[in-house]
Image (cartoon, rainbow, N blue to C red; front, side, top):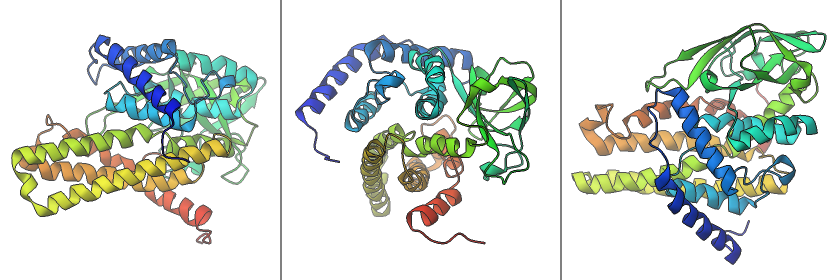
Length: 384
């Protein structure tokens, strides 16, 4: 990837900046973090604004409803929207960054036509039904069963850490369709309508007090066979496509946000006298180098995914492994800058520090990422 921007790319950046400067001041106030119907309306409203301006699905293939932008244009978009303080994808997180790209890659023409346009237009929200209470970090140990009954699957089981279930229209759901098969086989990827009878959603409150996760209980829920993405029992391969997007590109905007926070920490330290601490200055300097390197790794990963057909590769695991730890180190440094004020939950960065603890667990633990790097990149043998 040529890291120097062309005249055309700089023109794209300038037009985007101009549009953001015009539209962002006109947005309504953000709703309360606990007001999920309000947050859904706000996030979908922002998505509609992007769609009408031609910025929705910027990097998606044209035949999937996207703009077919280059990886560099996509990164420029993420960088400029984050710098401008534009709304994050929010409740649209799963639909835009996980389920949508997976359906674009693996779905039939009919499935792409049914599910992708509403995601891009900001009309439907997706949640993720992957993790289960008794599976731990071993996703393939899932037990939720789906038995075939005519043109439907009948699904029973439970999911946990289901992002945005309380406001979702659809769920990307992993189910076991062949209990006799080895655990990485016999899994299927379904699109489950969240208004189907038999679904119970119970919100979970995190350490930071937020409720973006939920438990989802499934009692004889009927899901049409036509909603299966990929072949029956081939869901593990489809899931790897979903997870490659999650680890490869879903955190891109957050790297830009972390670089912004790092600058704010330096300004705070200069203001409260902690800048005189040599060790703290070295720590912030090392983090600055770390996030700059992660941004370059992001550029490489996005470029590589474009070269290989649009699906991010195992380089996403390298990024996820290092980024999750760097984010925790960033907010540990924030606590050092704040001093005793770091115990005040109302103080900026305190809740971010608490939520950062989940990053080495969510989207595949650091141990899982280390195994992927060891086996698929370094070629080391699997442990017994």
